[in-house]
Length: 96
Image (cartoon, rainbow, N blue to C red; front, top):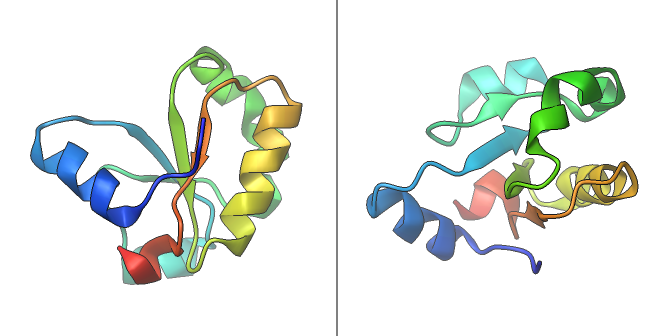
């Protein structure tokens, strides 16, 4: 599936949807600002959290970071691990 824009994500949230959102920034960045409903799993710890995410392999997972670069890496990694519906938030939280 294609990447997702901040406008599309906001519209879905306003419509009451609660997609799985993973913020791959560092915990201190997550504390400063966050997208409602996002969980924080920093890019560096993502490989150690795969077991916790196993149930999401066939569900939509939206990943984001500050600008979209780290989350693009996270999306590629998750796809390599068998996740079938990973979307990167274009422009990251800066665009949100």
